[in-house]
Amino acid sequence: MKALKKQSILPRIDGIQRDLSRLRELATLPVGEFEKRGDNFALAQFYLRQALEGVFHIGSHILSRLPGGRATEYKEIARLLGEREVVPLEFVNKGLAPMAGYRTRLTHFYYEVGPREILDILQNRLSDIDAFLDYVRDLLKNPARLGLTIE
Image 1 (cartoon, rainbow, N blue to C red):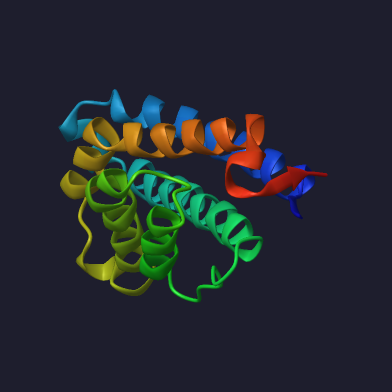
Image 2 (cartoon, rainbow, N blue to C red):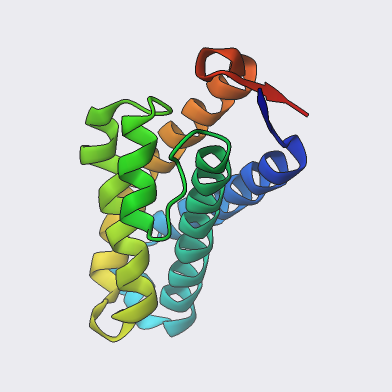
C-alpha cells in the first residue's frame, strides 16, 4: 500500500484556509472600493492563485500514490481525481476543472482578468475550494477506500 504523507498535505490545507480567510475578507468590500484600491485586486489575485496552486499540489500528491495517477497539467489532475474517485465526477465538472482553468488564466492570461471578475469569484466560488478540502479530509480519515495508508 502506498502512503499519503500528512506533512505534504496538512500544511497546504492550513495555507489554503489562511488564503480563503483573506479572500473572504476582500469579498466583503463594495465593488467600488475593491476596484478603487489596486492593492485589493492584487492581493485577491495573489491569494486566489496561491490557494489554487495548493489545491492542485495536494491533488497531485494524492494521484502520485494511485496507479496511473501521474498528471502534469492542472485540468488533467482534476480529471484524474474524479476518475480515481478521490472526488465525485460531478464536482470535477462543476468545481475542480473550472478551478484548474482559472489558475491557468491567473498565471498566463492575468492581463485579461479584471477586478469585477475576481470579486465575482470571491463572492460566488470559494465554496468549491472548501468542498475540495472536505474531500481531502475525508480521504485522510479513510485512505483505505483507495488502497492507501497515512504516514
